[in-house]
Amino acid sequence: MGKANGGGETSAAVPAAAVEELPRAIVRRVVKENLDRSSSREGEMTVHKEALIAFSESARIFIHYLSATANDICKESKRQTMNADDVLKALEEIEFPEFVGPLKASLEDFRQKNAAKRSGAKPKESNKKRKKEEKENPPAQEEENEDVVEEEDNDNDDNGDAHESEE
Image (cartoon, rainbow, N blue to C red; front, side, top):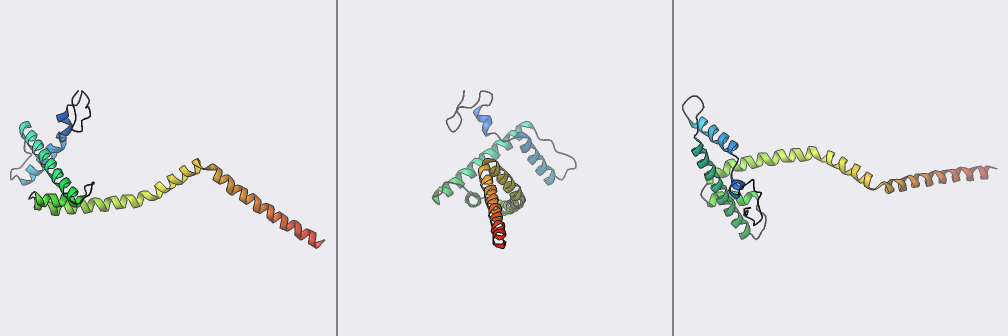
């Protein structure tokens, strides 16, 4: 069995090199969409398998280089977790500033969609948490019921006192 980058073993069915490959279908779709958009010819363009492999490998190397640069920026800031700002700074550092604007726009859209999902999902989560807590803590409910019973007993005592004073 081969070793993965982290030193752990990979499964026999998946070679270590395949773990780092980008999904071929997505690479094919991105390449075709961009070629069709930039081409003056009508109809769909065909891309050879070797060209798709070259695009995939180029994209993989670019992603690796970008993430390594962003990681260096993160470490310079004495942090352990990379964030979006590190990636944006890395794009400028590796001389791809033309990607910063579109990436910022996509990031803002992503954050807005997540905020909308979170605000819509919070009531459901809180209901689930409340139901889970109710199942886990039934004695707390019994104590509340005991308080109600005690209050009713106190009400009866008041009525009993009232009858005694009237007599």
